[in-house]
Image (cartoon, rainbow, N blue to C red):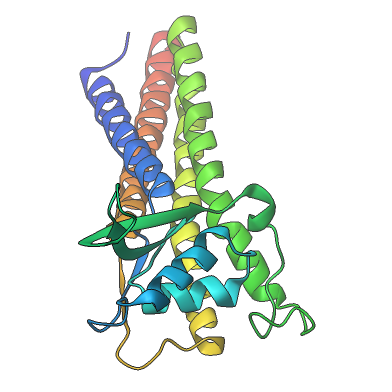
Length: 250
């Protein structure tokens, strides 16, 4: 029989874990990790249409899409890159005063393309630090979600077996998942800072963190709190069980 304190800790830990999973999943699937705000007027005229066409249908190149995002109020995510451009009339193909967001996804092969010391120059030396920071930033959230899913399976098996012992393993998995979530945010910010050192945004363009990044960041303490509750419940229950066993023997 499980003490009410341990049962409460397990319920609260499960709720925190579910919230963290939802937040991290939304963060991974959206593009608002980082956003650029360019001065008004930079996206007007036929030049914007050319940049849009190159951004959507052009050859994948880090410097090209970065420069376009600088000029057209772009947003960057783990799997998406977007720009804000004037819309087009459905019937006459003329510029529409309303602005619309145009997004392009990073394909899996593009995620593994090496980064170079000088973006856009494929003959320059490969920048191993930026290459692995980029790969870690999109792989670590997937690892984190996989660990939480695995911990859920372990928890279900523990319930079916009516055993409290696997709870310690569930806590450890959540601890590792939280570290992966934090690592993803750190890798993204470090990689972006290095990119800005090589490709400086034009004068007047301001960058800011987006809400998707904050969602990923919030998932970290939620996963750590869930881990702490699971580990506390497992350790306390084990101590109580050991004392009860010793008392019965005595």
